Length: 112
Image (cartoon, rainbow, N blue to C red; front, side, top):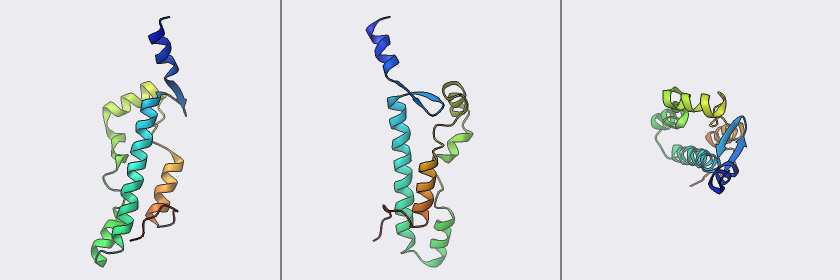
């Protein structure tokens, strides 16, 4: 086995049911952090919108986040082949944090 192959093997970590490279794990963590930031700022914005717009944003606070990627055929293929059918984006801690942010109950909630 060459040194390059060994480096590649060492770069693979087990993340839940997936074998992911550190760069893939980092990418997933970055996406989750960005989603949390979007929800955090949307919640802060709701406080300053007129009632109608605030209600609409409150009901759509999770819109246009990465949840829609589940329907993508290429992503489904990746999940099946690399993760044994377990979606690496499904993270209970991230999900719970976005719910707390949506409700303004997280330590990192933004107040303007």
